[in-house]
Length: 115
Image (cartoon, rainbow, N blue to C red; front, side, top):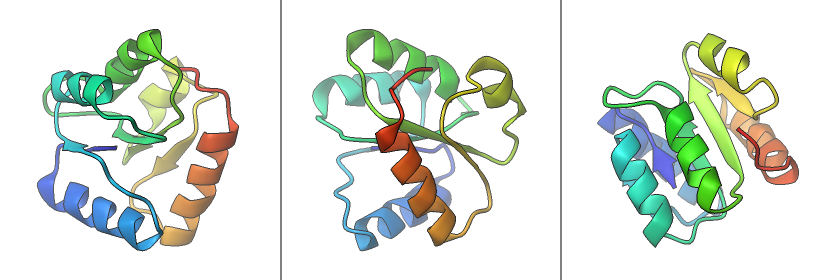
């Protein structure tokens, strides 16, 4: 699942993930929609923008993790909030290269799902 409030970035990220062999089960733009999608969509990974225009990606992950453990990766142009609130969470600064995304995904799926 991809959670990104910028439509162009969300679409491009989903395409890159699909090109990498992943199936994107949902693309969401808000904290509320991300939580709802996580409840209905069986996802192996959430790529979450840390700062959403409507809500918080960090808060969304914390809510989702109350229901079940799921690997996640925070992406943001400014990771200071993620570092402060979730220092052990996998994260990737925008803009990033595909090779960096692949490494971050590997770290996300091998790291316990904690926020």
